[in-house]
Length: 303
Length: 252
Image 1 (cartoon, rainbow over the protein chains, first blue to last red):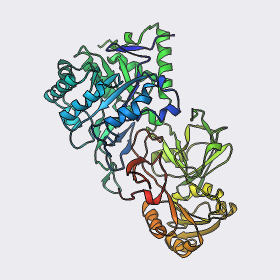
Image 2 (cartoon, rainbow over the protein chains, first blue to last red):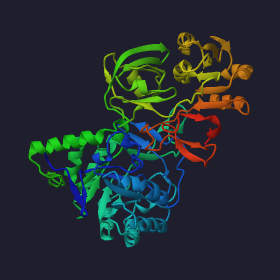
Image 3 (cartoon, rainbow over the protein chains, first blue to last red):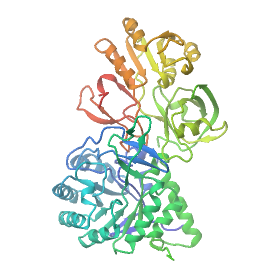
Image 4 (cartoon, one colour):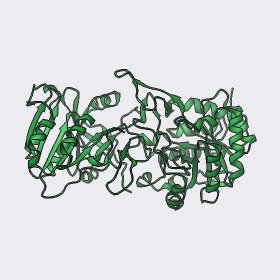
Protein backbone atom coordinates (compact mmCIF):
# COMPACT_ATOMS: atom_id res chain seq x y z
CA UNK A 1 0.00 0.00 0.00
CA UNK A 2 1.41 3.35 -1.00
CA UNK A 3 1.74 6.17 1.48
CA UNK A 4 -0.80 8.90 0.80
CA UNK A 5 0.45 11.25 3.50
CA UNK A 6 1.81 14.66 2.58
CA UNK A 7 3.70 17.22 4.60
CA UNK A 8 3.12 20.92 4.07
CA UNK A 9 5.02 23.45 6.21
CA UNK A 10 5.94 20.56 8.51
CA UNK A 11 2.25 19.81 9.12
CA UNK A 12 1.42 16.22 8.19
CA UNK A 13 -1.83 15.42 6.34
CA UNK A 14 -2.89 11.74 6.31
CA UNK A 15 -3.75 12.09 2.61
CA UNK A 16 -3.69 14.91 0.05
CA UNK A 17 -7.45 15.55 -0.08
CA UNK A 18 -8.76 18.61 1.71
CA UNK A 19 -12.40 19.71 1.60
CA UNK A 20 -12.60 23.08 -0.15
CA UNK A 21 -13.89 26.08 1.72
CA UNK A 22 -17.58 26.81 1.26
CA UNK A 23 -18.57 23.33 0.16
CA UNK A 24 -18.21 21.56 3.47
CA UNK A 25 -19.52 23.99 6.10
CA UNK A 26 -17.78 23.20 9.38
CA UNK A 27 -17.87 19.48 8.71
CA UNK A 28 -20.81 18.35 10.82
CA UNK A 29 -23.13 17.48 7.91
CA UNK A 30 -20.53 15.33 6.13
CA UNK A 31 -19.66 13.49 9.35
CA UNK A 32 -22.98 11.70 8.79
CA UNK A 33 -21.44 10.02 5.72
CA UNK A 34 -17.99 8.94 6.94
CA UNK A 35 -15.47 9.80 9.64
CA UNK A 36 -13.93 13.16 8.77
CA UNK A 37 -10.50 11.58 9.20
CA UNK A 38 -11.19 10.17 5.71
CA UNK A 39 -9.98 13.58 4.56
CA UNK A 40 -6.47 14.90 5.02
CA UNK A 41 -7.93 18.22 6.05
CA UNK A 42 -10.89 20.56 5.99
CA UNK A 43 -10.81 24.13 4.81
CA UNK A 44 -13.75 25.57 6.70
CA UNK A 45 -16.47 27.85 5.35
CA UNK A 46 -15.03 31.37 4.92
CA UNK A 47 -15.34 33.36 8.12
CA UNK A 48 -15.46 37.09 8.72
CA UNK A 49 -14.87 39.24 11.80
CA UNK A 50 -18.61 39.77 12.37
CA UNK A 51 -21.38 37.30 11.43
CA UNK A 52 -22.84 37.73 7.92
CA UNK A 53 -26.23 36.78 6.44
CA UNK A 54 -24.86 36.44 2.90
CA UNK A 55 -26.70 37.22 -0.33
CA UNK A 56 -30.42 36.74 -0.99
CA UNK A 57 -31.37 33.56 -2.92
CA UNK A 58 -31.15 32.14 -5.52
CA UNK A 59 -27.48 31.63 -4.82
CA UNK A 60 -26.73 28.81 -7.26
CA UNK A 61 -27.17 27.95 -10.93
CA UNK A 62 -26.05 24.86 -12.78
CA UNK A 63 -23.91 25.28 -15.90
CA UNK A 64 -22.52 22.77 -18.40
CA UNK A 65 -19.94 20.88 -16.33
CA UNK A 66 -20.16 23.21 -13.39
CA UNK A 67 -22.06 25.51 -11.09
CA UNK A 68 -22.18 29.22 -10.41
CA UNK A 69 -22.57 30.25 -6.79
CA UNK A 70 -22.90 33.50 -4.91
CA UNK A 71 -23.47 32.69 -1.25
CA UNK A 72 -21.81 35.93 -0.16
CA UNK A 73 -19.90 34.62 2.85
CA UNK A 74 -22.81 33.69 5.10
CA UNK A 75 -21.06 32.71 8.34
CA UNK A 76 -21.37 32.99 12.14
CA UNK A 77 -18.21 35.08 12.63
CA UNK A 78 -14.70 34.22 13.82
CA UNK A 79 -15.49 34.19 17.55
CA UNK A 80 -18.34 31.74 17.10
CA UNK A 81 -16.11 29.58 14.89
CA UNK A 82 -13.38 29.45 17.56
CA UNK A 83 -15.71 28.76 20.49
CA UNK A 84 -18.41 26.55 18.91
CA UNK A 85 -17.06 24.85 15.79
CA UNK A 86 -13.33 24.46 16.24
CA UNK A 87 -13.34 22.36 19.44
CA UNK A 88 -15.56 19.76 17.72
CA UNK A 89 -13.51 19.88 14.50
CA UNK A 90 -10.28 19.27 16.41
CA UNK A 91 -11.71 16.00 17.73
CA UNK A 92 -12.20 14.66 14.19
CA UNK A 93 -8.58 13.69 13.62
CA UNK A 94 -8.03 15.76 10.50
CA UNK A 95 -6.20 19.02 9.76
CA UNK A 96 -8.18 22.21 10.11
CA UNK A 97 -7.72 25.24 7.89
CA UNK A 98 -9.50 28.47 8.81
CA UNK A 99 -10.48 30.44 5.72
CA UNK A 100 -10.75 34.17 6.46
CA UNK A 101 -12.25 37.03 4.44
CA UNK A 102 -12.57 40.68 5.32
CA UNK A 103 -13.68 44.13 4.22
CA UNK A 104 -10.45 45.78 5.31
CA UNK A 105 -6.85 44.87 5.99
CA UNK A 106 -7.56 45.44 9.69
CA UNK A 107 -10.32 42.80 9.60
CA UNK A 108 -7.91 40.21 8.19
CA UNK A 109 -5.22 41.06 10.76
CA UNK A 110 -7.66 40.94 13.68
CA UNK A 111 -8.89 37.50 12.60
CA UNK A 112 -5.34 36.21 12.06
CA UNK A 113 -4.49 37.29 15.59
CA UNK A 114 -7.51 35.54 17.12
CA UNK A 115 -6.77 32.37 15.15
CA UNK A 116 -3.09 32.44 16.11
CA UNK A 117 -4.12 31.56 19.65
CA UNK A 118 -6.52 28.82 18.53
CA UNK A 119 -6.02 25.19 17.51
CA UNK A 120 -6.28 25.65 13.73
CA UNK A 121 -3.44 24.16 11.68
CA UNK A 122 -3.43 26.78 8.91
CA UNK A 123 -4.92 30.14 8.11
CA UNK A 124 -6.10 30.49 4.50
CA UNK A 125 -6.29 34.07 3.29
CA UNK A 126 -9.35 34.41 1.10
CA UNK A 127 -8.59 37.37 -1.12
CA UNK A 128 -10.44 35.92 -4.04
CA UNK A 129 -14.15 35.71 -3.15
CA UNK A 130 -15.96 37.14 -6.18
CA UNK A 131 -19.35 37.40 -4.47
CA UNK A 132 -19.13 40.20 -1.92
CA UNK A 133 -19.43 43.91 -2.61
CA UNK A 134 -16.35 45.09 -0.78
CA UNK A 135 -13.26 43.21 0.29
CA UNK A 136 -12.63 39.72 -0.97
CA UNK A 137 -11.32 39.78 -4.49
CA UNK A 138 -10.39 43.48 -4.48
CA UNK A 139 -7.32 42.43 -2.45
CA UNK A 140 -6.47 39.63 -4.84
CA UNK A 141 -6.19 41.07 -8.30
CA UNK A 142 -2.92 43.03 -8.34
CA UNK A 143 0.61 42.17 -7.22
CA UNK A 144 0.70 45.28 -5.01
CA UNK A 145 -2.53 44.55 -3.15
CA UNK A 146 -1.74 40.83 -2.71
CA UNK A 147 1.73 41.73 -1.43
CA UNK A 148 0.38 44.34 0.96
CA UNK A 149 -2.30 42.16 2.53
CA UNK A 150 0.00 39.13 2.76
CA UNK A 151 2.68 41.24 4.43
CA UNK A 152 0.23 42.76 6.93
CA UNK A 153 -1.50 39.49 7.87
CA UNK A 154 1.79 37.61 8.14
CA UNK A 155 2.86 40.00 10.90
CA UNK A 156 -0.21 39.05 12.94
CA UNK A 157 -0.35 35.35 12.14
CA UNK A 158 1.52 32.68 14.09
CA UNK A 159 0.02 29.88 12.00
CA UNK A 160 1.31 28.83 8.58
CA UNK A 161 -0.33 31.18 6.08
CA UNK A 162 -1.97 29.88 2.91
CA UNK A 163 -2.87 32.55 0.37
CA UNK A 164 -5.81 31.61 -1.89
CA UNK A 165 -5.48 33.14 -5.34
CA UNK A 166 -8.13 34.34 -7.75
CA UNK A 167 -7.98 33.13 -11.35
CA UNK A 168 -9.64 36.37 -12.48
CA UNK A 169 -6.28 38.03 -13.17
CA UNK A 170 -3.97 38.65 -16.12
CA UNK A 171 -0.85 36.92 -14.81
CA UNK A 172 -1.34 34.59 -11.86
CA UNK A 173 2.35 33.64 -11.66
CA UNK A 174 3.34 37.25 -10.91
CA UNK A 175 0.68 37.43 -8.19
CA UNK A 176 1.91 34.18 -6.66
CA UNK A 177 5.48 35.53 -6.63
CA UNK A 178 4.29 38.64 -4.82
CA UNK A 179 2.52 36.53 -2.19
CA UNK A 180 5.63 34.40 -1.75
CA UNK A 181 7.91 37.43 -1.47
CA UNK A 182 5.73 38.98 1.24
CA UNK A 183 5.60 35.87 3.40
CA UNK A 184 3.00 33.37 2.16
CA UNK A 185 3.90 29.86 3.32
CA UNK A 186 1.59 28.10 0.86
CA UNK A 187 -0.43 29.07 -2.21
CA UNK A 188 -3.91 27.61 -2.64
CA UNK A 189 -5.48 27.98 -6.05
CA UNK A 190 -7.76 28.51 -7.85
CA UNK A 191 -10.84 30.19 -6.42
CA UNK A 192 -13.85 30.40 -8.74
CA UNK A 193 -13.96 32.12 -12.13
CA UNK A 194 -16.54 34.90 -12.27
CA UNK A 195 -19.48 33.95 -14.48
CA UNK A 196 -23.11 34.68 -15.24
CA UNK A 197 -26.26 32.85 -16.41
CA UNK A 198 -29.48 34.46 -17.63
CA UNK A 199 -32.95 32.91 -17.61
CA UNK A 200 -34.10 33.63 -21.17
CA UNK A 201 -37.77 33.40 -20.21
CA UNK A 202 -37.61 36.13 -17.59
CA UNK A 203 -34.57 38.02 -18.85
CA UNK A 204 -33.23 37.91 -15.29
CA UNK A 205 -29.89 36.52 -14.16
CA UNK A 206 -30.53 33.17 -12.43
CA UNK A 207 -28.43 34.22 -9.45
CA UNK A 208 -29.81 37.10 -7.41
CA UNK A 209 -26.28 38.56 -7.15
CA UNK A 210 -26.32 38.68 -11.01
CA UNK A 211 -22.83 37.16 -11.21
CA UNK A 212 -21.34 34.22 -9.36
CA UNK A 213 -18.25 32.05 -9.10
CA UNK A 214 -17.87 29.17 -11.57
CA UNK A 215 -16.55 25.88 -10.21
CA UNK A 216 -16.65 22.21 -11.15
CA UNK A 217 -15.18 20.15 -14.02
CA UNK A 218 -15.59 23.10 -16.42
CA UNK A 219 -12.76 25.01 -14.71
CA UNK A 220 -10.40 22.04 -14.28
CA UNK A 221 -8.13 22.67 -17.32
CA UNK A 222 -7.81 26.33 -16.36
CA UNK A 223 -6.79 25.32 -12.84
CA UNK A 224 -4.23 22.78 -14.12
CA UNK A 225 -2.66 25.37 -16.42
CA UNK A 226 -2.47 28.03 -13.70
CA UNK A 227 -1.04 25.61 -11.12
CA UNK A 228 1.64 24.56 -13.60
CA UNK A 229 2.53 28.21 -14.26
CA UNK A 230 2.72 29.04 -10.56
CA UNK A 231 4.68 25.85 -9.79
CA UNK A 232 7.33 27.08 -12.20
CA UNK A 233 7.38 30.55 -10.63
CA UNK A 234 7.53 29.95 -6.85
CA UNK A 235 9.28 27.64 -4.37
CA UNK A 236 6.51 27.41 -1.76
CA UNK A 237 4.05 24.50 -1.96
CA UNK A 238 0.74 24.73 -3.83
CA UNK A 239 -2.56 23.31 -2.66
CA UNK A 240 -4.40 22.82 -5.94
CA UNK A 241 -8.13 23.00 -6.55
CA UNK A 242 -10.59 23.67 -9.34
CA UNK A 243 -12.93 20.97 -10.61
CA UNK A 244 -11.15 17.89 -9.28
CA UNK A 245 -13.82 15.16 -9.51
CA UNK A 246 -12.01 11.85 -10.09
CA UNK A 247 -8.78 10.18 -9.03
CA UNK A 248 -7.43 10.79 -12.52
CA UNK A 249 -8.04 14.53 -12.05
CA UNK A 250 -6.20 14.31 -8.73
CA UNK A 251 -3.16 12.67 -10.33
CA UNK A 252 -3.19 15.26 -13.12
CA UNK A 253 -3.32 18.23 -10.78
CA UNK A 254 -0.53 16.79 -8.62
CA UNK A 255 1.56 16.33 -11.77
CA UNK A 256 0.93 19.97 -12.68
CA UNK A 257 2.58 21.01 -9.42
CA UNK A 258 0.16 20.65 -6.51
CA UNK A 259 1.42 19.18 -3.22
CA UNK A 260 -2.11 18.59 -1.95
CA UNK A 261 -5.61 19.13 -3.31
CA UNK A 262 -8.87 20.69 -2.29
CA UNK A 263 -12.11 19.21 -3.58
CA UNK A 264 -15.44 20.97 -3.49
CA UNK A 265 -18.11 20.94 -6.16
CA UNK A 266 -17.90 17.17 -6.70
CA UNK A 267 -19.15 16.69 -3.13
CA UNK A 268 -22.56 18.02 -4.21
CA UNK A 269 -23.17 15.20 -6.65
CA UNK A 270 -21.17 12.62 -4.70
CA UNK A 271 -20.46 13.15 -1.00
CA UNK A 272 -18.38 9.95 -1.09
CA UNK A 273 -15.96 11.36 -3.69
CA UNK A 274 -13.01 11.69 -1.23
CA UNK A 275 -13.19 7.97 -0.46
CA UNK A 276 -13.23 7.06 -4.17
CA UNK A 277 -10.48 9.51 -5.15
CA UNK A 278 -8.15 8.28 -2.41
CA UNK A 279 -8.76 4.64 -3.42
CA UNK A 280 -8.02 5.39 -7.07
CA UNK A 281 -4.94 7.45 -6.27
CA UNK A 282 -3.61 4.72 -4.04
CA UNK A 283 -4.12 2.05 -6.75
CA UNK A 284 -2.44 4.24 -9.37
CA UNK A 285 0.57 4.72 -7.10
CA UNK A 286 0.77 1.01 -6.30
CA UNK A 287 0.61 0.08 -9.99
CA UNK A 288 3.39 2.51 -10.85
CA UNK A 289 5.56 1.79 -7.83
CA UNK A 290 5.19 5.36 -6.62
CA UNK A 291 5.93 5.43 -2.90
CA UNK A 292 4.92 8.95 -1.97
CA UNK A 293 2.46 11.55 -3.26
CA UNK A 294 5.33 14.05 -3.34
CA UNK A 295 6.88 12.05 -6.21
CA UNK A 296 3.90 13.06 -8.34
CA UNK A 297 4.06 16.75 -7.50
CA UNK A 298 5.27 18.67 -10.56
CA UNK A 299 6.21 15.46 -12.36
CA UNK A 300 4.69 16.56 -15.68
CA UNK A 301 7.21 16.33 -18.52
CA UNK A 302 6.32 19.34 -20.65
CA UNK A 303 7.06 19.28 -24.36
CA UNK B 1 -23.29 6.69 9.90
CA UNK B 2 -26.66 8.24 9.15
CA UNK B 3 -26.42 7.79 5.35
CA UNK B 4 -25.75 4.82 3.19
CA UNK B 5 -24.14 4.75 -0.25
CA UNK B 6 -26.09 1.76 -1.61
CA UNK B 7 -28.00 2.69 -4.78
CA UNK B 8 -31.71 2.44 -5.45
CA UNK B 9 -33.26 0.56 -8.37
CA UNK B 10 -35.83 2.25 -10.60
CA UNK B 11 -38.82 -0.11 -10.77
CA UNK B 12 -41.45 2.19 -12.31
CA UNK B 13 -41.27 5.26 -14.56
CA UNK B 14 -44.59 6.42 -16.00
CA UNK B 15 -45.90 9.68 -17.36
CA UNK B 16 -48.79 10.94 -15.20
CA UNK B 17 -49.67 14.14 -17.05
CA UNK B 18 -48.11 16.65 -19.41
CA UNK B 19 -44.44 16.78 -18.34
CA UNK B 20 -45.12 15.00 -15.02
CA UNK B 21 -43.43 11.67 -14.29
CA UNK B 22 -43.98 9.07 -11.61
CA UNK B 23 -41.04 7.06 -10.29
CA UNK B 24 -40.88 4.21 -7.84
CA UNK B 25 -37.40 3.36 -6.60
CA UNK B 26 -36.43 0.51 -4.30
CA UNK B 27 -33.77 0.05 -1.67
CA UNK B 28 -33.75 -2.32 1.31
CA UNK B 29 -33.13 0.11 4.13
CA UNK B 30 -33.68 3.78 3.35
CA UNK B 31 -37.40 4.13 2.40
CA UNK B 32 -38.51 3.00 5.87
CA UNK B 33 -36.78 6.04 7.37
CA UNK B 34 -38.77 8.59 5.34
CA UNK B 35 -41.37 10.85 6.90
CA UNK B 36 -43.84 13.10 5.15
CA UNK B 37 -42.56 16.40 3.75
CA UNK B 38 -38.99 15.18 3.34
CA UNK B 39 -37.21 14.98 -0.02
CA UNK B 40 -34.77 12.85 -2.00
CA UNK B 41 -31.74 14.23 -3.85
CA UNK B 42 -31.34 12.30 -7.10
CA UNK B 43 -28.02 11.99 -8.92
CA UNK B 44 -28.35 12.49 -12.67
CA UNK B 45 -25.58 11.13 -14.85
CA UNK B 46 -23.51 13.91 -16.41
CA UNK B 47 -24.97 16.76 -14.33
CA UNK B 48 -23.04 18.65 -11.66
CA UNK B 49 -25.96 18.95 -9.26
CA UNK B 50 -28.44 16.44 -7.94
CA UNK B 51 -32.17 17.08 -8.38
CA UNK B 52 -34.15 17.51 -5.15
CA UNK B 53 -37.55 15.79 -5.47
CA UNK B 54 -40.21 15.64 -2.75
CA UNK B 55 -41.21 12.22 -1.47
CA UNK B 56 -44.71 11.48 -2.76
CA UNK B 57 -45.08 8.22 -0.89
CA UNK B 58 -42.96 5.63 0.90
CA UNK B 59 -43.22 2.17 2.37
CA UNK B 60 -40.68 -0.23 3.86
CA UNK B 61 -38.76 -0.77 0.63
CA UNK B 62 -39.78 1.86 -1.88
CA UNK B 63 -40.00 5.59 -2.45
CA UNK B 64 -42.41 7.18 -4.90
CA UNK B 65 -41.10 10.37 -6.50
CA UNK B 66 -43.37 12.44 -8.75
CA UNK B 67 -41.56 15.21 -10.60
CA UNK B 68 -42.04 17.74 -13.35
CA UNK B 69 -39.63 18.07 -16.26
CA UNK B 70 -38.26 21.59 -15.87
CA UNK B 71 -34.82 21.38 -17.45
CA UNK B 72 -32.12 19.04 -18.67
CA UNK B 73 -31.69 17.12 -15.41
CA UNK B 74 -35.35 16.24 -14.95
CA UNK B 75 -35.61 15.48 -18.69
CA UNK B 76 -32.81 12.91 -18.29
CA UNK B 77 -34.60 11.49 -15.25
CA UNK B 78 -37.81 11.11 -17.25
CA UNK B 79 -35.94 9.03 -19.84
CA UNK B 80 -34.33 6.60 -17.41
CA UNK B 81 -35.25 2.95 -17.87
CA UNK B 82 -36.83 0.60 -15.37
CA UNK B 83 -34.12 -1.62 -13.91
CA UNK B 84 -31.44 1.07 -13.86
CA UNK B 85 -29.58 1.90 -10.67
CA UNK B 86 -30.01 5.42 -9.28
CA UNK B 87 -27.94 7.11 -6.59
CA UNK B 88 -30.28 8.90 -4.24
CA UNK B 89 -29.62 10.66 -0.96
CA UNK B 90 -32.70 10.33 1.22
CA UNK B 91 -34.58 11.05 3.32
CA UNK B 92 -33.43 14.66 3.60
CA UNK B 93 -34.74 17.73 5.36
CA UNK B 94 -37.28 18.49 8.04
CA UNK B 95 -40.82 17.43 7.14
CA UNK B 96 -44.33 18.15 8.43
CA UNK B 97 -44.88 17.87 12.18
CA UNK B 98 -48.15 16.09 12.93
CA UNK B 99 -50.11 15.78 16.16
CA UNK B 100 -52.72 13.16 16.96
CA UNK B 101 -56.34 14.23 17.19
CA UNK B 102 -56.13 17.26 14.90
CA UNK B 103 -58.16 17.69 11.73
CA UNK B 104 -55.71 18.74 9.08
CA UNK B 105 -56.31 20.55 5.83
CA UNK B 106 -53.65 19.62 3.27
CA UNK B 107 -53.19 21.93 0.31
CA UNK B 108 -51.07 21.27 -2.75
CA UNK B 109 -50.63 23.45 -5.79
CA UNK B 110 -49.29 22.03 -9.07
CA UNK B 111 -46.10 20.04 -8.55
CA UNK B 112 -46.54 20.85 -4.83
CA UNK B 113 -49.33 18.25 -4.72
CA UNK B 114 -47.23 15.02 -4.62
CA UNK B 115 -45.73 15.38 -1.09
CA UNK B 116 -49.24 15.89 0.29
CA UNK B 117 -50.14 12.28 -0.60
CA UNK B 118 -47.64 10.74 1.85
CA UNK B 119 -48.76 13.39 4.35
CA UNK B 120 -52.45 12.55 3.84
CA UNK B 121 -51.72 8.91 4.65
CA UNK B 122 -50.40 9.95 8.08
CA UNK B 123 -53.50 12.04 8.94
CA UNK B 124 -56.93 10.97 10.10
CA UNK B 125 -59.70 11.99 7.67
CA UNK B 126 -57.85 14.98 6.24
CA UNK B 127 -59.42 17.60 4.01
CA UNK B 128 -57.22 17.74 0.91
CA UNK B 129 -57.42 20.67 -1.51
CA UNK B 130 -55.47 20.29 -4.74
CA UNK B 131 -55.10 23.11 -7.24
CA UNK B 132 -53.84 23.00 -10.83
CA UNK B 133 -53.58 25.45 -13.70
CA UNK B 134 -55.81 23.36 -15.93
CA UNK B 135 -57.14 19.85 -16.61
CA UNK B 136 -53.98 18.65 -18.40
CA UNK B 137 -51.94 18.94 -15.19
CA UNK B 138 -54.30 17.21 -12.76
CA UNK B 139 -52.61 14.29 -10.95
CA UNK B 140 -53.03 11.85 -8.06
CA UNK B 141 -56.79 12.30 -7.50
CA UNK B 142 -57.50 8.56 -7.14
CA UNK B 143 -54.52 8.15 -4.85
CA UNK B 144 -55.87 10.74 -2.43
CA UNK B 145 -59.35 9.17 -2.48
CA UNK B 146 -57.88 5.75 -1.82
CA UNK B 147 -55.97 7.21 1.11
CA UNK B 148 -59.32 8.12 2.70
CA UNK B 149 -59.06 11.86 2.20
CA UNK B 150 -61.95 14.22 1.62
CA UNK B 151 -60.80 15.67 -1.69
CA UNK B 152 -61.49 18.98 -3.41
CA UNK B 153 -60.10 19.73 -6.87
CA UNK B 154 -59.71 23.25 -8.22
CA UNK B 155 -58.35 24.53 -11.52
CA UNK B 156 -57.57 28.12 -12.42
CA UNK B 157 -59.72 27.92 -15.57
CA UNK B 158 -62.42 25.53 -14.37
CA UNK B 159 -61.48 22.83 -16.91
CA UNK B 160 -61.58 20.25 -14.09
CA UNK B 161 -63.20 20.44 -10.67
CA UNK B 162 -64.14 23.79 -9.25
CA UNK B 163 -63.01 26.97 -10.98
CA UNK B 164 -60.83 29.14 -8.78
CA UNK B 165 -58.03 28.96 -6.24
CA UNK B 166 -57.32 26.64 -3.34
CA UNK B 167 -57.72 29.62 -1.01
CA UNK B 168 -61.38 30.04 -2.07
CA UNK B 169 -62.07 26.59 -0.62
CA UNK B 170 -59.85 27.14 2.41
CA UNK B 171 -61.64 30.39 3.33
CA UNK B 172 -65.03 28.62 3.31
CA UNK B 173 -63.90 25.65 5.37
CA UNK B 174 -61.37 27.10 7.77
CA UNK B 175 -63.83 26.76 10.66
CA UNK B 176 -63.78 22.95 10.34
CA UNK B 177 -60.04 22.42 10.63
CA UNK B 178 -57.27 22.73 13.22
CA UNK B 179 -54.19 23.21 11.06
CA UNK B 180 -53.10 23.71 7.45
CA UNK B 181 -50.18 21.94 5.72
CA UNK B 182 -49.27 23.33 2.30
CA UNK B 183 -46.86 22.93 -0.58
CA UNK B 184 -46.81 24.89 -3.83
CA UNK B 185 -45.65 28.12 -5.44
CA UNK B 186 -44.71 31.00 -3.12
CA UNK B 187 -47.65 33.29 -4.12
CA UNK B 188 -50.05 30.46 -3.24
CA UNK B 189 -48.32 29.83 0.10
CA UNK B 190 -48.50 33.52 0.95
CA UNK B 191 -52.21 33.61 0.13
CA UNK B 192 -52.82 30.50 2.25
CA UNK B 193 -50.92 31.96 5.19
CA UNK B 194 -52.91 35.19 5.02
CA UNK B 195 -56.13 33.15 5.33
CA UNK B 196 -54.72 31.11 8.26
CA UNK B 197 -53.12 33.98 10.16
CA UNK B 198 -54.69 34.48 13.57
CA UNK B 199 -57.05 31.52 13.02
CA UNK B 200 -55.18 28.24 12.59
CA UNK B 201 -51.57 27.09 12.55
CA UNK B 202 -49.97 26.70 9.14
CA UNK B 203 -46.90 24.75 7.97
CA UNK B 204 -45.50 25.40 4.50
CA UNK B 205 -43.03 23.47 2.36
CA UNK B 206 -40.66 25.76 0.46
CA UNK B 207 -38.65 25.26 -2.70
CA UNK B 208 -35.23 26.77 -3.41
CA UNK B 209 -32.32 26.03 -5.74
CA UNK B 210 -30.10 23.63 -3.79
CA UNK B 211 -26.46 22.55 -3.81
CA UNK B 212 -25.38 19.80 -1.43
CA UNK B 213 -28.88 19.07 -0.07
CA UNK B 214 -27.57 18.43 3.47
CA UNK B 215 -27.01 21.92 4.88
CA UNK B 216 -23.29 22.34 4.28
CA UNK B 217 -22.99 24.65 1.28
CA UNK B 218 -25.53 27.30 2.36
CA UNK B 219 -26.90 28.04 -1.11
CA UNK B 220 -30.60 27.37 -0.37
CA UNK B 221 -31.07 30.19 2.11
CA UNK B 222 -34.29 31.29 3.74
CA UNK B 223 -34.57 33.91 6.48
CA UNK B 224 -36.23 32.29 9.47
CA UNK B 225 -37.33 33.80 12.78
CA UNK B 226 -37.95 31.04 15.33
CA UNK B 227 -40.68 31.79 17.88
CA UNK B 228 -38.27 32.10 20.77
CA UNK B 229 -35.10 33.15 19.01
CA UNK B 230 -33.22 35.51 16.76
CA UNK B 231 -33.81 35.64 13.01
CA UNK B 232 -31.16 33.76 11.02
CA UNK B 233 -30.47 32.54 7.50
CA UNK B 234 -31.58 28.92 7.58
CA UNK B 235 -31.05 26.24 4.94
CA UNK B 236 -34.17 25.06 3.12
CA UNK B 237 -32.58 21.62 2.66
CA UNK B 238 -31.92 21.09 6.37
CA UNK B 239 -34.08 23.40 8.54
CA UNK B 240 -36.80 23.11 5.88
CA UNK B 241 -38.23 22.40 3.43
CA UNK B 242 -41.16 22.53 5.90
CA UNK B 243 -41.41 25.59 8.12
CA UNK B 244 -44.00 27.09 10.40
CA UNK B 245 -45.41 29.80 8.13
CA UNK B 246 -45.13 32.42 10.87
CA UNK B 247 -41.37 31.84 11.09
CA UNK B 248 -40.41 32.53 7.47
CA UNK B 249 -39.99 35.75 5.57
CA UNK B 250 -41.55 34.91 2.21
CA UNK B 251 -40.13 38.00 0.51
CA UNK B 252 -36.48 37.94 1.62
